[in-house]
Image (cartoon, rainbow, N blue to C red; front, side, top):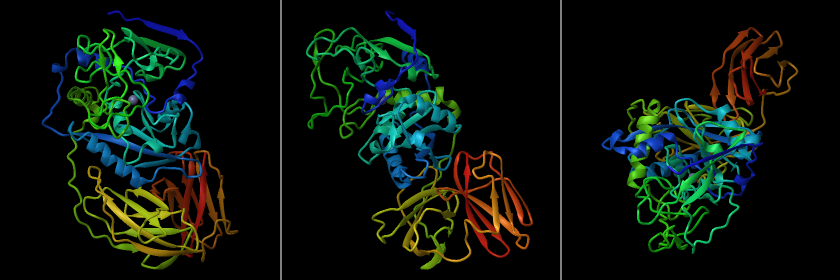
Length: 503
Ligand SMILES: [Zn+2]
């Protein structure tokens, strides 16, 4: 094959990515895909079965616990992802609860390499890792073969298919215009006139998108340009013959009649064509993009069953929750509670793995002040303002079914009242911040600690090792990520809440 590699050492700069507007992935054709495309018939596809793929979702906000995507929006776009993959008979499920992580340095990151650092630090095992945050290095999203995928919040509306696109990369698919990501040259420096015949080859830079992270070497490869007569479709571009030639590497809008590109292009033989806008892996507008080709679907199934077989642990899906009745146990209806210590509890629902809890000042929930997914039928709410009336409601769902259906809801009032104290003279807590070690608490001798609960900033109860001995206690924090946690101390007389910083 007429193929060569250019390798050169340099201190890597990835400024180019910030200029991209859609997908940051120049998804190199993996070795797995190259082998698969040589002999697709040799791979198991199991088209009779629905494939259940475990995904791990991490919502990243800033250091203050703000600027994160709402959890209801996340569930809605998960439903869209599953619709986009319905024809491929692939369904994504949630073996673990949605995580919230708060790091300003990652919620808006400027380079794909910083995203890689985030994945190395935060990735979960045994799932395909997906991150949702404010700014994915200037892109709508990108996928790193060794890490996972990132989607920007502003490309995660109900009209977008960015997640499906990045997931396609995660399951081995290149762009149909593979090779053209940097234009005819790898760095976008050479302009191309689409009226002229395209070259036989283009250059692509996939340094950050190889199977492992390479920090100090630029990797550029030549990619064969696909022709309209189909003569090189097995080798050129994405290697799929049912995705027709496409050289469009910036976002484009399709014709309303047949969803092809306005831009007419010319192949190396001089033949004219327009690109297919219906392919999710193209850069066509989200309103055009709707499908994967047969060969793309087969490749994704084969990739999951073969290369990602460790993720295929034969889970039996739970059935959907069709009807339920939730009692809003605590606070009771119209109760007034201390705004720094809102303990919520509701009745369990059969078949529910998770509960999405929403808070609003409006009975119609027209504006949501906070929504959070928790695993148990309780939470501590640390972030609602004082002297307000709060409506809350609960949506039970399980790992496989994400129907949007809420409880009737309840309401409570917040005020500043009684016995909670962050700066009480009777309580000492140190060190704060704590550097992943023991966090100590000491009360006056005449007060006895009965139990201590730790919650993350989203109100989720976290189980930690701790020692309680009369008026003294210590909490082991070594398994916690950096961030702010709420510690609630119940004594034989009253309770206290305080904030614990882990660094
Ligand atoms: Zn892409």
